[in-house]
Length: 125
Picture: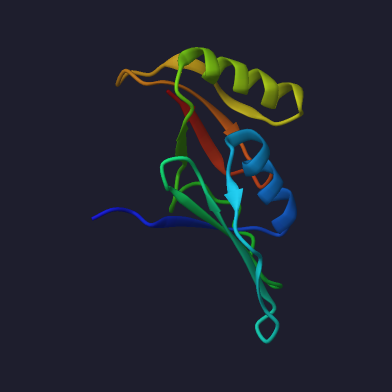
């Protein structure tokens, strides 16, 4: 058994698609559009087969809460040097680094960036 994909609601579908393509090498499939429901989405595929669905639809409620639900997801970039390089690139491009590169208590080397909608993305080896 495996997780097939995670999904994120967004108000700016194109901005989020570009973020994951540019910084994490995602390949976007064709845009899906359901005109009746005014729903649009992209499936993004990463090396190794993991997928992320980005979805938008008018009237999505904004909760702003990080207390419940998905806390973060992690993107493995292959090396400590790449964690550091990508973290600095994201910082210089104006993204919020909410966790500086470090070795965690459980032995992971990671940093944390907020994507354009404020979702926490761990960058790890």
